Image 1 (cartoon, one colour):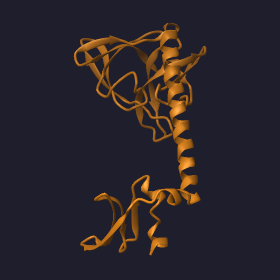
Image 2 (cartoon, rainbow, N blue to C red; image 1 turned 135 degrees about the vertical axis):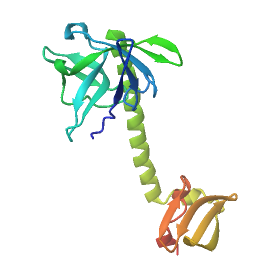
Image 3 (cartoon, rainbow, N blue to C red; image 1 turned 45 degrees about the vertical axis):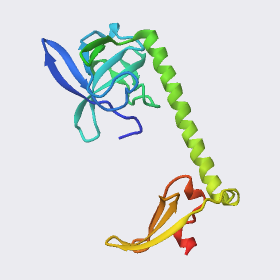
Image 4 (cartoon, rainbow, N blue to C red; image 1 turned 90 degrees about the vertical axis):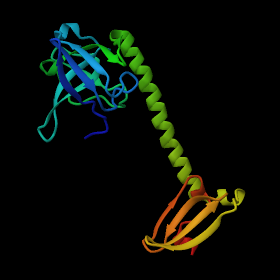
Length: 212
């Protein structure tokens, strides 16, 4: 599966109307797990950018499924879609014959809420996409900065927390625990040579291979 998170939905029929149950996370911010999505069949001329649709999808293993995503643009033969919680557009485009219908509302905790589509829905999804992009870029930049900071060896020169080591023999092997204020912040299994360390203590606690 690609970097997009796929929202798959389970089909149910109620009072002659198509009802789906949302699961997944690609439309988080709009739907929650278990929301009942009320769907109406429409012609492609009634589908506009910003509308949320359900379409059939064939996966690489030939399995069939249904996906709920938002239309971001349309062409004569197909439309382009993306989950509001996805950074990337769906590929390939969705051909009109794949479309099951348009989600016009959803039910949660016994309350029905209209789905915002059209230009209003598109603008709202673009705002969510921008926030998501900034968060992802921020996390990437922070990880790179943190890695450089750890490799620099600067932090141990200015931060010297009092770390106690306790050695003990257990059924899992010979362990060394690193304690800060009576809290275990790192652990070294000398038998399996497995080392785990909480952040930000990995900036000041050397890996055991260098520590012993």
